Image: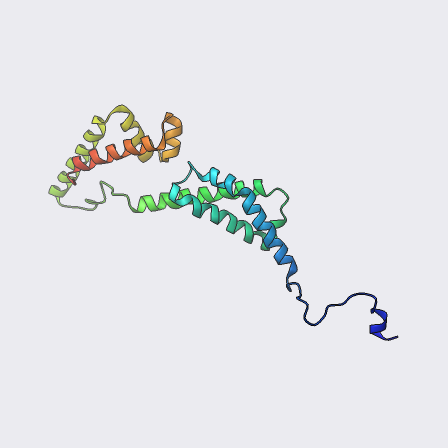
Length: 192
């Protein structure tokens, strides 16, 4: 029996017909990820607002979906409840972001002792103690709320959104109090 005779009843692919992509499964996964992105992007964006600086929200959202698309060897698109998966991923990313922000903050920190550390000169030691005393005096002269916010941030390590939530004020108000506190300390240290 001839092969063409056997299959002549079924239509075949002609020479000029377009063929499906070689990796048809990957195209389907890509479309699924795009649909998940469209559906869940607003939710993830809302999650990051108020928890991260506005200028970083878009990058964080994009990173969550980038990780989602590449997770589990590209099989993340098959996850049944992608919303929960994405929120958990956003939480983990925010924690990483916070740790990186803390490292960046510590690397930019201007410590009182850094300037005079290891100084064996008695004059330099006296000057360092004087600068520290002036800074302590400046902190004690701050309004109670400004002083408390400054101490919560610098000594307890709380972030602005956390302080705002605890105090029942806006993040902008926390920023304003921190600006006042830092300006007062800077003036007291003689760096104005």
